[in-house]
Amino acid sequence: MSCQFVPPYLLERVADSSGDRYLTDTRSLDAQLRERRATAPSAAPQPTDADGTKTIFTAAGSTRLPGDRARGDTDPPTGDVAVDEAYDSTGVVHELFHTVFGRSGIDGAGSGVTVTVHYGQSYDNAFWDGEQLVFGDGDGEVFERFTKPPDVNFHEFTHGVTQFTANLRYAGQSGALNESMSDCFAAMALQRMLDQTAEEAEWLIGEGLFAPGIDAVALRSMREPGTAYDDPLLGKDPQVGSMADFVVTTADNGGVHINSGIPNRAFVLAALRLGGYSWERTGQIWYAALTGDAVGQDTDFTGFAAATVAAATALYGTEEAGAVRDAWAEVGVDAEGSSPAGGGRRPTSGRVVVSRSGGFAGIGREATVDLDEGPLGAEVASLLARTDFAGLPAPDEVPGGDRFTYTFSFEGEQVTVPEGALTPELEQVASLVLGSPSDGLSDTP
Image (cartoon, rainbow, N blue to C red; front, top):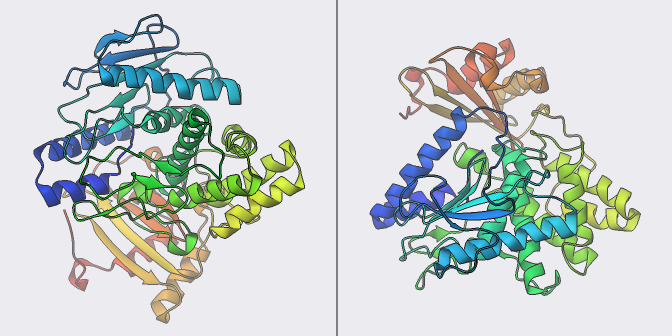
């Protein structure tokens, strides 16, 4: 799993607006990393480390990983700002998980942490690649160095923790939860470092990441999603904080960085309701849910909300559980609702987006139908109501080179089905919604 800190839509916006060569290079490297993630084995690799706890390496402007060893646990500061920032930040988040949650290292088994800085030339991102943390230096015009805000490190470290616990699939709602887990624990680590209560905290992620002159307070605001930046170069922060505004999209792995604002805000509301330090009761509840049996790869917002309410009840009692339930309700998530794993819900109203990708020619198609309007909507709703989404195989379980892949997006969920696994109902839905090339739909390579 390779998870980048800066959303791809933001890098695309800035690169297209500015023509910045370094941003274009960053996008190219990120695309290679996403391709590597898509073709990597599903088994989670074990992180390696030279010193047992944390070792900082430098790529010295290359893309070699891990690069050359720069600092380990017994070494003094190097004078290289990025190396020393990475060392200090890794120590803070490692200590949070060890002291507050009783976790030994990213994998829970005491394996050390490997971190690489000075990755690429003016690389505008940071990521967890499934084995280690990696940080670019930024271009200096839009982004500062990615080791500067410590919560960037905290965020990427937590992606590793998520990989070795629930291993939330990095797409759709489960992917947005994956992103949210990293923001939530990053916020806890930062607030603990600053000795801030939930009420005192600013709840910003990536504060100080943008260069002077950029109209942005941070990359994300957990308390007020969608307000972190509004700049001619960046555009307006697109994050949402309520299910009423949930964005259905095939970009950004199904909007993982956009819709993560919903569970982010739920965490903030729960922390404010419960009071005190966020890593105490609220953090314990979220960690218990993340590491418990109720949360798995395809858990959605409703499923995670239910897991946090159950954890609050078990750890503390009905009053705390009620506070958590109310926090989720305020962002439009019903913690008492059903949440079958693997997208088992069958939509009967609202909008459904059907997209087709793949094939030898690589031509993609997408169309939308409103289930509440007209004969077409009624027929599609009837077909979807007869579909057992939970019983469909995963895309990588069905062989067939150059065949199409279909994605059905509805009610904040995405279900991707290989052409060879389409049920008769879904095949008919695809035909009705996408039509044929002569229907006037635009095809995009």
